[in-house]
Amino acid sequence: MSVPRSLPIAAGIVGLLLLASCGSDDDSIAVPNGDSGTVIEVEMRDIAFSPTSIDVEAGDTVRFVFTNTGKLTHEAYIGDAAAQQDHADEMASMGGMDHGGDDVLTVEPGNTGELTHTFDDAGTVQIGCHEPSHFEAGMVMDVAVS
Image 1 (cartoon, one colour):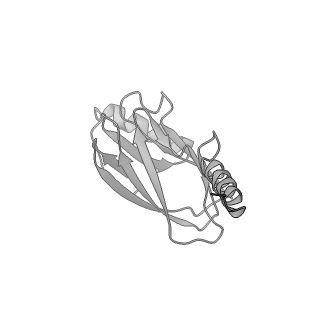
Image 2 (tube, one colour):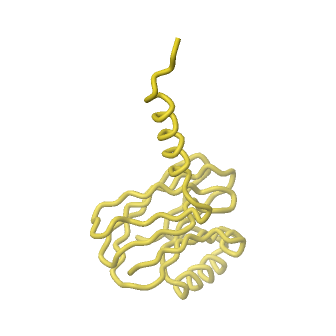
């Protein structure tokens, strides 16, 4: 039985598509320009976010869906570097208690939570986990707002 000529070509195309879908090592996402209702799935692992960075346009509204696949409680706090430091100081002074707010979310292991944020101004914003030693260990996602 002979193999149709189109079969090897189709297999090659599928292979290339699979390679392209694997992404790059930087684990980043670019939000389409002008999108006002983007949903980004974020995995919270011990101790990292995936993706590790995203690019958005000023004015974009993004709904983040955080899924904690790790064994530890994780937090997502949205703010610039100064706000991250203030939040870390506040968490330390409160013994790590969740103090709520529009730009902060705590997710227990195995659970999912959501935060919606509009990125008003160009600059750099971070999403950080301020559970004890997580941020310092690199559990931070960079958001480039252009």
